[in-house]
Length: 320
Image (cartoon, rainbow, N blue to C red; front, side, top):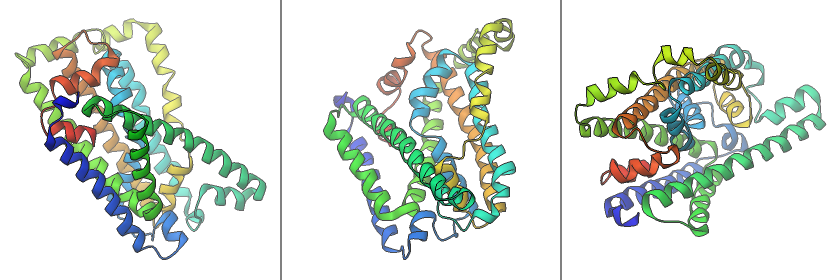
């Protein structure tokens, strides 16, 4: 698809990657201690903490995984993933508010070591590393898939280049660089989804009628959803998976970045509300795509958006 990828889109992508590297190098020059490298200087605003928490949840798989599922499954899937917002709310208002005595620590492993000894600390560290390695590998695959779909760039060299950029900026800049790029990613996501939704809405003939027709169809009609009790039970059984908090290394690190437990609670509470709006915006996008073309295979959805609705400049924003 490289022939549909304009020079402007390459400039947007290149500028974002270059800015990411600059952020990492500049942030790294201001780090004076390992504590500052790991959890910052406790001077992050609540808005910045909220953004980095959201970026931890709203990764690239939201477009590649949740959007196709919202398109094909509809309201049932939306109700299931709404558990993420409840997860964030519980994390903030029940767990983070009780973490004041641990905020001097640098990691989840250190907390577990202080409570249960060096053996548990080692187990926590090793298991955390193994889990994060798997997630990072998935994220690198998503990067490669995005590049292949939007620009035609593919192959191991592309993944290696993307991985190198991520490793360099995070290694040099530590948590400050990661946090700043998290803010950039959330801002980009917040701009991209509304612009794309507006473009699809304006391109639809009789858009209001088509959207109402989609809302009356099985995936999005509440009465029809309730009538299908087997599917209702299946997707409601996913709710506990999404709701139960999981204080893994990345989420726990966000708590340790707060200046006090109250700020951590506020950041997670804010993230819960904004996450709900973001999931709702993805659901609205899925409804618009259903109104535009109800016969798409879910796996083809992102490619269809790129080919039919991502104009010059928006493609660059989408890949970012």
